[in-house]
Length: 513
Image 1: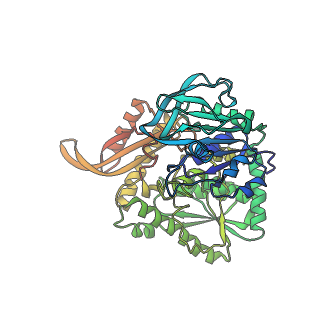
Image 2: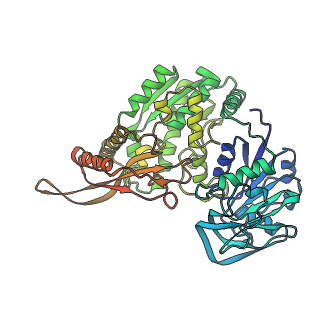
Image 3: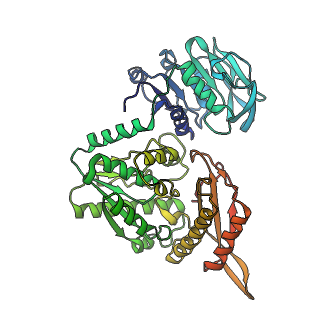
């Protein structure tokens, strides 16, 4: 990929690090993420157009807090500090950071006090931002001006225009900040002088070239689940190396209803790929017997995938690489780098150390879900596959709370199919970002006919989101929810209650486990 301009995002452990990168790419400006530990000498040679310092969970005064070299701010490259990154800029350059008695969290009004600030061009004097901090900048460094304030934060924004150093205490990258994207655009185009000429087709061309260069004439196995991520990854690798790719479709017995047959048909007949279907449902369920902890379930399923790949690779001959559909949200939620672990994804934190392959091919690791779909569309993958509902690698195993059994899987398959059918009938498929059913471990009393029942509760989950890093619960019409509930109760054995989850992310995750 020919990149005329690149923005660097320095990761200090904040959960929104990847989201910042995504927002930059939305502006058609290429960016890459590096650890805060990257030496300044290495950064100088990269000729970055600008640097963004992310948020993080620490206080700048903590003994283990991540810091950066002061020389970073003397490179002559524009820098934007966000939240912890803003505090770090102030602290490093001689300002003062204090602990607040009043913590600001959530939607917060803020006021622009420097109307001619390049960072706040086309931003109203008063608007709403998303705050998440306990410490705050109580005194800016010398030569800095306060550019914005909030009721509890005397320095919500600051700048040293001559050195092109800017900082905001809030998070412009999240949707809750009304003019957040405008602020990022201002930094990119008014401060860094970016042109915004990076497009997804460039990503595709470069990724295919990189795969060919890395793999050569060696062979690759792809873990194909039939979901959006693994499907797009498989087609991307297939375009790069053709028949040197073998897709292994592990049917672990916890797929959605009829999904196994659908996946096999599409990729064998339509894409003419080397596809091996491995039916190991009984083995996986046996390994999960008695296991109730969600982290343990994920790791058991993840290791089961890898062991299956290794076994199949030995059957087909020497295979050097494993391809996975890992995407950005998988990485950040697994606590890669300095971020806190939200949950382990089987294709990130759950991989055994003795993986048995020369290396991994993860062509989508730097993309978010909507970007993955854009790549899929440009690759010519049918719309019904590109817009297929996201599905976790561990499958229904993490949508069944408590122990996973064959009976519970069958129950959830039927309930989930009904939910998806009714959403489709209502024409809501593309209006709800993700929707699925969960089989809870809760049983309650019910009445069917003249008899007492004591059966399971099914929870329905639907969210709307642009990035899957934050999400709002979907306001599905009551008549649709009513129809789904009625059908599940009448058609699915062992269920006598249906509830709808109205929790956003955060504080919840999209999946229940």
